[in-house]
Image (cartoon, rainbow, N blue to C red):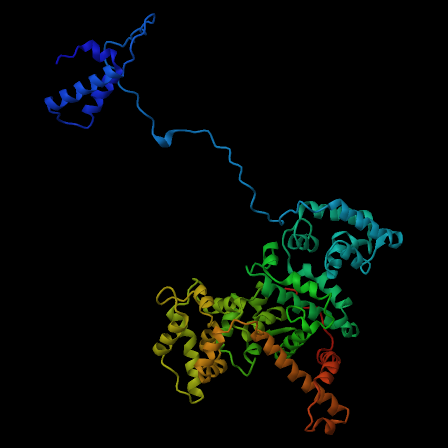
Length: 530
């Protein structure tokens, strides 16, 4: 079959078919090529429409005499398409999720009405409590509100200044955490530092019914406030940055606990942050170690805690700056009362997440984020020396290491990370093994089934710190009660077989504690000015 050259030029479909037949083929048999070409021509003839009378065929297309190369298709990556308009809803609200149902104008009207009932429409710090309730906030937000509206400068807050401040707050801050940060932080700051909490806590000391006995002992106000601030940062400031953000406030129970102060008259029932009994235990422990009473303790002072239960090597790491704050204090080799609060809670509650991080920083000598076998052996050497001095044969390090690796089950062989210790839920046993001899021996003598029961118990049990503080407080109050009765000449009445009723202890406790601390401390200056 002969194919004219003009047919190839005038039939683009035929040209495409020929190109398809020859594509990727180095050799094509003539017979197969002719069969395919003939079947294609027959299909083309059948697909042509029949010519109707009165219609003419379209003019043939003209092609250049020489074949033209096929246009190249650009690469997919080089194709620039117009951006699609996709409406993605907003999902990040750093200042809280706005409430479209809230009526800000109605709230501002109620506030304005509340100021009408105040003389000259000027509220002092006490009357600000009524305004806080009208705003739908807890009672002890009144001091931050008073401060944010400029009341600290003038001694009162006018209706106009408060409404202006509150309108700005409602427009830009939409949840409790964001509002609290706005009220308490410095202007144009988005986080809270330690000194920002002082006005709030001073108002708690001045007005809470559970702290009325402190009115006669103003020298203890700064001590109590410092303790509460350190406990807040210990629990809330999970980033260790020294600045509490709204995200950290949201993840903590601080605002809920602050709201409980309005409902609970006995502040000792609120064990988180505000308990006076916990403050008393912490401060008495610090006072016993502070031999020269300069409100700082040295490395040798700290080593005397709990009859030198902690090893010297771990105490050296504490004073090296791994966990203490303030460069001046670290260089002078002294620990402030604020840092002692962190030490004591970490020492007595090694299950706490902050405590696990605290001791991990101390044991991570090279700071690489991993506890290597060398670091574990370094701390265990002193434990062995102390046990040998007591006549106790220590376990060889290799055997002990096998036990600890079985206890922690690290993800990487020979490397224990912070994640491993938090996951295993036995970090307290691990840490005591390497730097607290007394507690290590206690763990060795305990029933292993009791240890496993503690691990499996997920109930709302009191923390190790709560148990320690409660036991120590009872001991301290009993000692002070015995001493006061001895000084009054009634020691014989105390030395009886009849136990003192708990209610009488509770009624006498605050008075005894305050008077005892007053006698011990004498003249006190401010604390934690690092």
